[in-house]
Structure formats: structure tokens, C-alpha cells
Image (cartoon, rainbow, N blue to C red):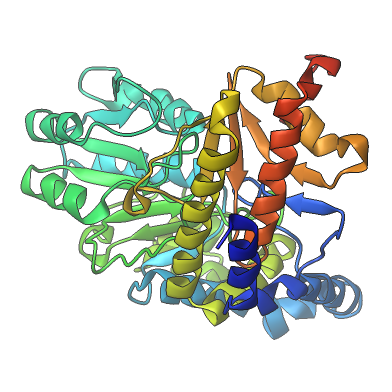
Length: 421
């Protein structure tokens, strides 16, 4: 069977195909940037209109008691179901960077681990910025970055050697933002625990498309945003998970109102909440939480195992297409071939990556627009969100790329860039 027919048949037999209609879609566009910002679901519009017009517009302050105070608890519960945590171990609020700062600061102050901050060269830059801002609290007054020979995969032997010889607080991205490399959770958490270390996992590129079972994998701490594969909307709050066996030993450095055990007693003395809520700070961002609630509902309804299975199938199909149609045009797959070590995007490299991206997004020659993203200096990320991306979408994308490359259409495009690429 040829790859075109294979893609069409896979779409026909896709158990998740009904979910695409739940999103705002453009028939003349293929959206492959869900690993940066998820699509807008129809129900989210309805939910936000209700909150804005009815709850805020008409009910005003009464909506705190009627709706909003319980919204955070409801979302926390749904996130708990997604990652299989116990009650009181996960909260949704603040940004990923803020939560990372709070938890790293708490770990350093706890004296439970060596005061050493270690990360690696695959981690997301903003995580490294946060760590650098806390280096004065470490023993050596610096952070350590483990360098690998390339941006595609982690050198597991080197990473494990570092954990054994230099124990401390490690911060790693579960799925690498550039190459989509997926770290082996169970294996690394075991090494960390055996050697007096803890790994803080940034799950921003993994949550909603990979199976994260905090109990099975013995995750102690995890953070991650909700605006990518969970479709929570631009700037939607992140989640913070802390295992109960370490939670009681940690203190939130930001002693905010909602971290108090009884915030509405208005006590001048700060008494932290007894569960993960002690890492809350300011008033919950209701308008940002509403879309997260719907995004979690959709993910739970689809089932994370089903989502992961389709993600793997999409990735394998895309790699096969690239090998067959694009490899002769200088395109290199810069993601792991083994799906066990790959998230839900494929990164391809070409010396004209940026100009190719501009052509894809423009819908040049009245073709469908294809929305990927570009990462310096020669990476095109093709993110496939299983809830709304189909197999034939990927076939069409590769055929458009093939035409651009065969005809060297990128030569007609300048190198100018907008701020967001």
C-alpha cells in the first residue's frame, strides 16, 4: 500500500477522529504547532462567555462562593487523574517559570539534598535562566550544565554518571524542546533516588501526549505548562506536582494569600496549607483556568493511552514519509527514530529551514498553509497533536515540503523574521 492510501486508511480507522470537530479548524490550513500553542476548542468559547457575561458580569463578587473558589480544586483533581497522583499533591496556577523558581528555592532551603543545581544542554533555556537566578543559594555559587555531543539525544551513561558522582538537584525536560527526545523516567528516577538526588521534571512538551504516571515512575517533582497539548490557551497556568513524601519538608518562598491554610481568616500570621496548596500564592486567575478545565476534560475523555498510541503512529508515519520523499533534498530527521524515546513532534533540519518555514506559513502558490515552528539555527518542528491532527495532514505537509525543495522556491523568500517564529 502506498503512503497516501495508508494515511487515508489510518484516518478512517482513527478512534480519536471525532475530537477534531471539537476545535476551531480552517480547512485551508494544517496546524502543526500544538507543541507551542494548542488549538481553541468550541466549548472553551462558550465557557468563557458564561464566566465573563454571567458569573463576572452579573453575579460579580458572589461568583467566588458560587463558582470560582471550587474551580481550582476541580482542575487540580482532573490534573491528578491525568498523572495518577494522590489528592493534595498537584496544583494548577502561576507560570512554569514561577513554579520552577518556588520549588527549586524550596529544595535548596530544605537541606534534603546537596546544594548543587545541575541541568543539561537539552533543557529549555528559560529553565536554565531560573536556575541561574538561584545559583547564589548553592554551595559552589554556580549551576552545572552537562553537555552532550549533539542536540538530538541525551547521553544516558554520561547523565547517570553525573548523578552518581555529583548528587544534588537536577532539572530536566521530560521531552526536549528541540529534538523531541523523551527521557526514560523510571530509569533515571531510580538512579537519582539511589544516589541522594532528586530530579525536577519539566513536562511542558510532554503533558497531554505522553503517559505520565507519577506513582509508577516514582516522580518526586514535576512542573509543566497547559497551553500546548492541553489546549489551555495562551499563557494558561502551569501545574506543579510534589510527592507527599517530600512535600512536608518543603516551604514555599513566596508566602502568598492563597498558600495560607485559612486565607479568609485574614490572620496576620502566616500558617501554610498542609498540602500542595501551600505553593499557591496570589488569587487564582479564573479567566485563564476556565480553558484549562475544558482542555483536561477532553484529554481525559480521549484517554492518555489512546492519545499516546496515536502520537507514536503519527510520528512513525511522518518519519517514513520524510525518508521516502525528502531525504534526497537535504532534509535530516533530528529526532529519535525509536518512538520509546520520542515525544509528539518531529524536528527536521535543512540549511534553509527559516525560509522554508516562511513559505509553509504563507500558503505560497495558493497551497494549504502549514503552520510549524522554527528553532535556531536550522530546525523545523512539526508538532502533531493527536486530538486534531490526522495522518493525511502529514502526507499533505510532506508533499508541500517536497515541492518547495524540488523547485527551490525558498530562494524567492527573504531572511527577515518576526519576533515569534
